[in-house]
Image 1 (spheres, rainbow, N blue to C red):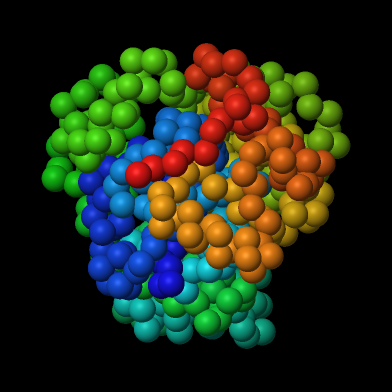
Image 2: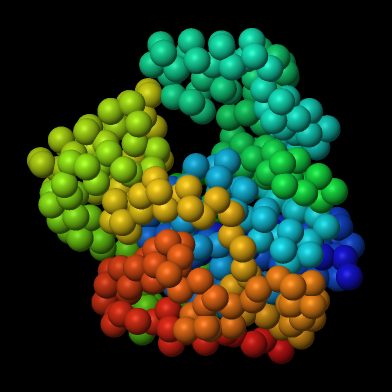
Length: 394
């Protein structure tokens, strides 16, 4: 079976996502589309607007055959490790191709730059270290040096979806070189807040939601996704980005100093900076603004906040380098066949949280806490990770 994989958040699912799903099937002649979906916290560290189960249902209605959970331990990470976790799950599912959106869809350049970064010559490492010592962030330093070596591809190195595409290609080279990567040119601006354009971004749609601009939301989403979205709104099954500000600040203000030091990606004094800012900040936004600098981008601070909120330590990350099991959120008949084939190859499949083969693993503990905290922000009871049923679509 020709299986194509997609990595997504669908926060929320919009018309551009539906276009990507259709193009992925067409461009790869796929018999099955598998989506690896971030759980209830996004890659930049904020709570997702809708629960993973609701976003899964939208994905199935928009053309996915199987939706797998990308647990928080990999979903709330820098682009490199986010991609590694997602590509490993797609490999376990039997995908031969990954299809992603990119502002610069030059596949040849993508492969060349990815191969260069995986080799990382010594002179490049030294130049990178010099820029870091000068106060540049890792992303900015790497992009500037790569632009010198690969002129004409500055967009690929600086645009968000192209950067992710580069990380997927690197993950493929590292984990499964036989897997292919196909890019679909992205339509529209990933970060644009304009909800009036023909294909608004997820950022714009979240802004429209916060303003109560239902007309813009409806125009930007496939009709069935919009209808399900409104059911969630009417039933109060959503979480605003600032809903967990108080639990976060409470956690940060009561954490011992050694807990800050053990946070992932908190080297170079970042843990101490976060601890100091938490003493006076009254919101997550203010906290991130106080800590952000050229060296420490806002996205890195945001992820660090979520690591603290969920109790994720550097040791947790080291103990769980890659996911080892498939956790289906939903599937149709074709997706069921993909799961069956994976089981026959000996891949563990988690049908229910209560039957997780690694109940004591850090990634599972974190996922349970993430679900319960998201539910708190949405005004829902805890324990829903164990009551959530797998969606079976027609």
